[in-house]
Length: 241
Image (cartoon, rainbow, N blue to C red; front, side, top):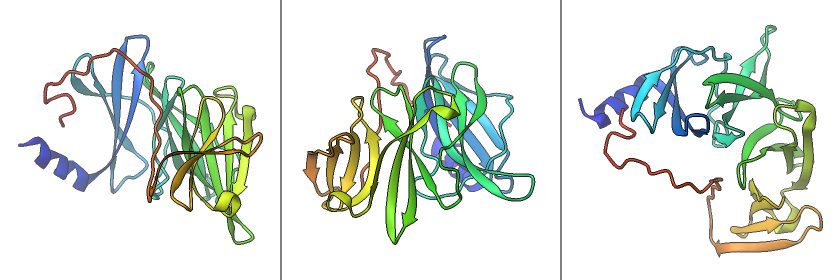
C-alpha cells in the first residue's frame, strides 16, 4: 500500500490533527498526531514521531475528553514552554460545554488542561504565536454593538491561570479596519492584518502603526520559530504514514 493511499484511508476514518515540539531532555524533535475516530470524537488515538529514531509509536496516555469545533481559527497548535497547545471544547456534567486549552508535554508525553480567559460561549478564542515561543497568548473575538472586538491576553506565568493579563483591545473599526490579529512580537507589538490587506505592527502602548511586508494579503498566517542546527534527515520515510 502506498503512503498516499493509506493516508486517504486514514482521512476517511479519522480526524487527523498534528503538533510539533522539541524534547529538550532527549534532544529530540517530535511530531504528535491525534487520530480521532469520526464516530467517537472525544476519544483520540495518540501517536508520536521521533526525528531521532525516525519512527512512529503509539503512546498509552490519558487524554482529557474533548471535541473540536471545525472553524478556521480553532485547533491551530502553538508550542510554548515545551508543550503543544490547542483550543478545544469540553462537556460539563450538566450537558453544557466550555472552551479550554488542551496541552501536550513533549518531554513527559502527557496531556493537561489550561483554562482560557473570558470564559463565554459567545467568545471565540485563537492561540497566538509569540516571537521566541516563550509565552502563551490568546486573542478572544466577540461582538459588541455590531462590531467585532479583539482582546489579546498573555499568560505572564505559564500554568498560572490568574496570570492571564489583557494587553491590547480594539474593535474592527479601529486603525482603518482590523481583519485579524496574527501574532505578538518579542517586544510586545501586535501583528495585525488591516482592511487594506497590509500586515502591520501596532504598539499597544502608544498606538503607533508600522506597516511590514507588501500589500494584498487576503489571507495570512504567522508562526513562531527558534533557529536550530538540528539536521532533519532527508530520507523519504521521515514523515511517512
